[in-house]
Image (cartoon, rainbow over all chains, first blue to last red; front, side, top):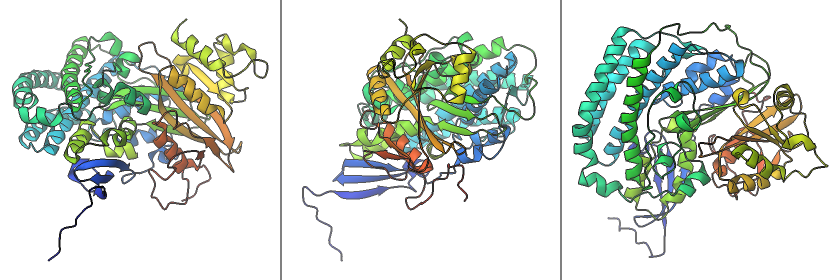
Amino acid sequence: MTLPVELRHDETFVLNLGPQHPATHGVLRVKLTMDGEYIVKAEPVLGYVHRMHEKLAEAGNFAQFMPNTARMDYLHALAFNQGYALVVEKAAGIEVPERAEYIRVITVELNRIASHLLWWAAFLLDLGGFTPLLYAFDDREQILDLLERITGSRLTYCYMRFGGVYNDIDDEFITGTRDFIKRLRSRMPSLYHDLVTHNIILIKRIKDIGFITAEQCRKYGATGPVARGSGIDYDVRKNEPFSIYPELDFDIPVYNECDSMARYMVRMDEIEQSLRIIEQALDKLPDGPVQAKVPKLLKPEEGYYYSAVETARGSLGHRLICDGGKTPYRLKLRSPTFSNLSLFGEVAEGMLLADALAFMGSLDLVIPEIDR
Amino acid sequence: MNRIEKTQVALAALFPEGENEPETVTPVEGDEAEEAVQTGQRQPGVQPTPYEKHGSHLDVLCENEQVVDIAGVLDKEGFFLETISGVDWLKQEQLEVVYDYTRYDHELCRVTVRTFISRTDPELPTISSVIPGANWHERETFDFYGVNFSGHPDLTRILLPEDADFHPLLKDYMP
């Protein structure tokens, strides 16, 4: 029989969380120094799904990198499509037809809802609730079906092209999307809010837990729902308007509580705002081409270019440097969760292990996007 | 004075006149500014860039040691660090490090800070003492380009395996 290890009261031990742990959603490893149940030091270890997409970008022409963009954030892949298309269009001076811009926004927002639904399901699974997952996946499935008909894939989309999108949307998609808006709106209050948001078990687990100050957000460059849960009114769609977002009427939910509950509420409200955006875009959808005439092989002018979009997790930036050739000389991706996760160590200090896992879930991590 | 001009004045204070070109304070628009950005062969200083074309309002070319002071000024002005990107200019035998800053603000201002370092002995002071978020971005630049950020608290591999002995984003790297 082995005797239990006895720790001195001032002694700490190292706990290895991951890289194969269900709560880390993929392959993130966190080296925790523990004092009993309390975290003394938390050190995320990255790189388990690193694929060096930035080197791959330098190996082919501009169009050849488009499929790679969806392999980073596989939950909001269309925003990565859009971000890359925007920076190359900026560099090459390509105009996008209006109808294509509308279709981009409709599909990106649908994809954003799908991403938030999956986050919601997985987050509650982390906290021990299994049923919500079934509801969320039911709704998410409707979106994936709609997008599959138009884009040809369910997760790793390669739908955007420089100067447009590759496939026009049809009446079936439009009616399907309108039906989905109606369906989700009718399900949100009862299935999502009554069952979960107002649930005392959830509130006890995430309210006043995982406190991130606005100053911490700024020091670590946090964006997206993480920043908006800390009272920072920052959304690239409003602060640095791109595409047709300025023509649409929608709000940016901001909560001042700075805790995990605030981040939860930001995402739930964002689902409703995305529904509003889609509805308006469908109403205003103009006729016309969905693809501009663009040379097969692009050779943008030499120079430095930066462009940002808002993904479900925050500001995604592309830093593109061209040397006048047909391949990107340097393409750097500023992925939102890389910065968002970097504050984890500081915030998790002194937290209970179980709370830290709930806090980690509220950051909405997508590991392939961090590791690139 | 709008946000861009205010930032420009704050940053220009780090580049005393006389040594550098004096015209940086007046906004340069169009071809002249663009040409300067593209060639990268200009004197250190702050220069406005056409946002529509390049996605950045101010382009700051600086000496290596100045990155810390610039980070301090921008931090005081309420900026946050978006990212740090390395670039390998193999033909010029130089590495370039590009820092992107912006603010949580509806009055948009994006600042690009660039500095060139030697390719054989790439070394830069760390800005992580000013901006803790730079810690991981600097580790990544070290990982991919081998840039040695002096004073960094934990300059180790971040995305590549801990025992890797190569820097894959260098243009002459062969797997």
